[in-house]
Length: 477
Image (tube, rainbow, N blue to C red):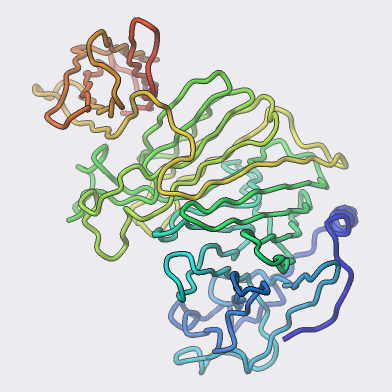
C-alpha cells in the first residue's frame, strides 16, 4: 500500500508548484486506460475498497480515509501521499485491497489502476458508524457535509474562463498530501497541487467535520499566463424548479433543487437574496462589491413536504457559505444560470471574480472559509425571504410576483414596500400578514411596457431605514 518516502512541507509544495509553472502544462488523462474510461456507471460503482479500508489517519482513529479509483467519467489520475510529520509516503495501488464485483469484474484491466481522489470519514452522526464528511474527486472538485446532511452542491479549487466563447478551462488537482492529525485533533489537513494550462497552485485545505463542517482554503497561484476571467471560491449546483417556475414542469414533486438562492452580505453591510432560476437561455449576473463579507448558495427550504422526494431528499442538501479571510478588494459575485431539463445536470455556478486580472509570473494568494451546514453561517437579523412565486395576474395581462418574508420579530406596523425596475414599472404593490405567524406577504405586478427583461429589486423599509434582505431578481420575457 505504501511506496517511496520523501520529505514534505508546505514550503516544498509551494516550490514545486512554482517550478511546475515554469514548464508547459502536461495533460495526464492518457494515464487512464480506455477500458476504465469506457466503463459505465454501474461498473464503476462495483469497484469498491476492500475490508482493509478505510484506513485510520489519526492515533485515536477519529479520522479515516479511503482512495477512489479512476474510471467512468473520472479520467484524471491523482497521486496520493500520507504525511507523518515532515515525511510523506506515497500510497500505491494494491489490487488485493479492492473488491471488483460484477459488472466491473469483467471489464477492469490487469495491472495498475490510477487513483482519482479520496473520501474522508468520521463518526459524524453516531458512534461506531463511519460517515463520509468530505470527498475530493474530479478536476478540482470537492464536497462536504455536516451532520445529518447528504451531498449536494460542489466546490472547486478554481474557475477559469467560465462562460467565455473560447471555452472553460478546468484546473485539476494533480496530487494530494493527507496529513496524519495529532492526538486529539478535530480537523484533517489536506494539501493539493493544482495544475492547468494557465496556472499552477499550492493549496492547504483544513477540514473540521461536525454539525457544520468547515473547510479553510489557503491558496497561492503561480500563473503561467495572464488570466482575465478567474473565479475564486467557485460552486456548482443544480436548480430545476420550485414555485417560481413550477408551471414549466410536469412533475409530481413540489420542487427540485440542490440550492434555492444566492445570498450575499456586501462590504457595505447590505443583505441580498437572489432566487435561483432555470432560465430558457443562459443568464449571467454580476453583483459588484468591495471587500465582501460573505456569499453562498443556500438551501433554505428544510422540510420533506417542500420537495416530496423520498429518495433524493433535497431538504437535506447543504448550504455552502463563503467567509472571506482578509480584504478581497473590489470585484463581483458572479452567478451563471444555465437552462436544463434534467436534475442530474449542475446548471448553477457562482464565484468571486476580482477586478484585477491574475498576472503571469506574479504569485497570487487568497484565503477563505466555507461553512457546509443546513443554514448559512451568517444571516440577517431582520426580515428574510422564505418564498418567491410568480404567475399571471387575475386578468392575464401582467406578471404577478409574490414574495414572502419571515419577519424575525420585526413589527409590520410602519413597514412600507419599495419596488425598483430597470425596465417597465411595478404596479398594484401590496403587503399584508399571512395566517402563518410572523410572515409578511408582498406582491406586485410588472408592467413590462414592451421590455424584454427587467432587473427587479424589492425592499422593506421602516422609519429607521431598509430592513433585512433585499429581494433581487431578473425577469425575462
